[in-house]
Length: 147
Length: 147
DNA sequence: GAAATTAGTGGGTCGACACCCATGATGGGG
DNA sequence: CCCCATCATGGGTGTCGACCCACTAATTTC
Image (cartoon, rainbow over all chains, first blue to last red; front, side, top):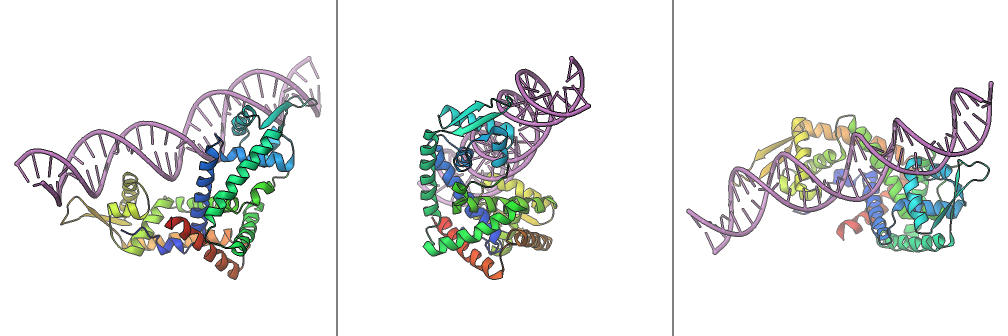
């Protein structure tokens, strides 16, 4: 029995999107697990690195995760020394979160892992084609993110 | 707080793949749920329509799902009248599964729903660009499926 | 014909993910 | 000063996908 995909499905660009995306996701997750981290940890570190410190509530909005779920992510990051939580002095309900230097070096490691995974996933494409794909996907992504 | 994606992530093609794929997947799942079906049901119907009847075991291999999980999918499809199970006469351990005419019309409905979802997801792209995207993704998909 | 293998079926587990609610601390408006 | 809103936190729920094991029936092998 050959395991070919039914044409009815492979004709669907969204099917290919879903499958390749899922594969990329799981491969990266496996690499992050080597450090005891998950995808949310990387997303939070990236947000903190790219946009600076956040109030914890704003960080949850940023990465589009429930406020009650980001708590454990930050617990992990704080325990690993990758992020610091500090009570806001003017509004003591708020907790300001910042990435630490160790967090930045960790994020660089994660980025490298992601680049390796991506290189494997996109192996069939040459440099120009990868750029094309990225450009097309960026527009698709902006379309669904903006809506 | 603007919810922009951190550049560290949006620079990753695999991140865009994962996000857009997940979005497409969930939107199609929502449309299939209107008929009380899930993605596996569509995948099985597509396999039966494209490759003809399967022994149940081979069907599980085809769609890459555990043999003990495909049972419920076929229960649902049989109850809906979309698939028929029949004991193999020569090897009475086997159960041969075939799509019914009602199953084919149902599959056509699902394909239409998928096309509508796809049209929304790929809205930012014109026809040529959609073809480009499909071609690129096909090669990426073949790469990970063949490995 | 006995033993090993294969097929289908039911059951359970496990992790990821997304939500939702209750609580305690704090801040702001009447 | 009291009431209400906000924030962080903990806990719980439900779904979903993937996986694994046990059991039964049927077939193949020796």
